[in-house]
Amino acid sequence: MLDIRWMRENRAALAEAMAKLNDTEAPWELALDLDAKRRRLLQQGEALRAERNTGSKRIGALFREKKTEEAGALKQRMSAIGAEITHIDDELRRVETAFHNAMMRIPNPPEPDVPVAPDEEGNVVVSQWGEMPQFDFEPQAHWDLGPKLGIIDFERGIAVAGSRFYFLKGAGARLQRVLSNWFLDVHINEHGYTELYPPMMVRGHSMQGTGNLPKFGENLYRDAEEDYWFIPTAEVSITNMHRDEILEAGALPRYYVASTPCFRREKMSAGKDVRGIKRVHQFEKVEMVKFVEPATGREELESLTRAAEVLLERLNLPYRRVAIATGDLSFVAAIKYDLEVWAAGCREWLEVSSCSLFRDFQARRANIRYRPQEGARPAYVYTLNGSGLALPRVIIALLENNQQADGSIRLPEVLRPYLGSKMEIRSAAQAGGGRRQTQLARDI
RNA sequence: GGAGGGAUGGCCGAGUGGACGAAGGCGGUUGUCUUGAAAACAACUGUGGCAGCAAUGUCACCGGGGGUUCGAAUCCCUCUCCCUCCGCCA
Image (cartoon, rainbow, N blue to C red; front, side, top):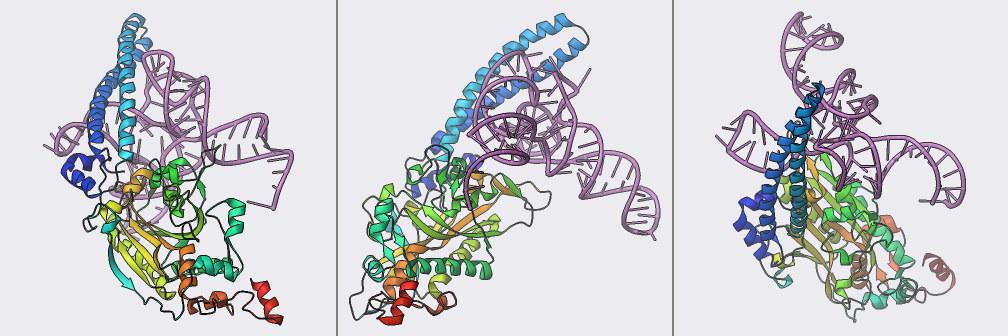
């Protein structure tokens, strides 16, 4: 949500921002009209209320003085004013509801250096890291590798839960758990984050705080009987953790990290990315969320993005940082970088992280404030978040990029402290007979 | 799932229709006293909307929403959350 005062005083800048975002539906003009109407009604109502307050006090006094007749007459006048107030309040309520709805549908204006373009065609690769692996054989995609190695089971996932579900099994499930642990450990030990175990179902108002509702409800799962919504990312629970709070001076910045499942209906992407585990209804993600002082917003975005990039570098996965163009920016983000990792089997750049600065847009919706100095008036915090990282697509890249001619996978050295001797993934058939096979049967 | 009890300022807690933005206490800030500290005493000590250059004025807020009334922290309805006991469960 934007600051209505800023909107009033910066009409031209607002119009320009909406044009840049290519959002022709944003009801910003309506919001400004309703705001003017709202303030007019507010003033009328308050003038009447002031009159009634003094009148009512007078009535009380008159009764105490036993001047009941005078009090009765005054009572009648106040009754008339009361009716008028009711009338204005009704009107005001209608206007305010409409105003609020309009405000909730106005997106966050972009930062000045966001590439301006109507859609994702305008996204700009700002940096690239690493070498794309070369093979002297035809590299396979993970949807072939996974089942052959016995570490991803699509058929049974679909049988149990329907399309876009899967089992990770044996070394596959372990790889995900190990990666998740390592990501968390790096963020906690090296980047100063505090680990959380957050709720994975939340109330509707929390979805509003992060901007997932009202506009994007169709991508969310919800409980049919009660007001519970499944989080599409831990961002929702963590950002709302400090809702309606005033953080004391010195409490910022706050860095949080959590590994959680994410639930997405993917209704909007029907038929897209249907093979493999690229786009699924449930996936694990390590999410970083920051609450910071406004002046530090941009540098915090840079360090957040770096915290995610470092993981890819240590895994030796080639990736690129993409600056998202205005027309492709999410509703709540003021600026966003996507990190895309190269997957050699399906020959695609896969988004594994999305790092955004929201300025005070989410903080206004969720009412998260801080005191700049002790005793100072509260101000809205800036929030940021980014994945560090989304697990399935990292697994895809690790499998596809590190595959050997025989179909086995060699995992990066950085994971050795977590994997011990299990640095290779092989199918049961490859493992050979005898003792080794039973060993692997136990492993896989 | 059943029965009951609650939600008041940073914290504790009083307030059952009018003088209540809210007693009292704790905490905090400032001052007096003191060489300094403590104690004592005194004053101040919530958030937000609107109007205004400002001083300031005004309105709202006693968990959320709605209602009754000239007037609601107080009465009624409803929702949310918390606590206790029973049941069930990891």
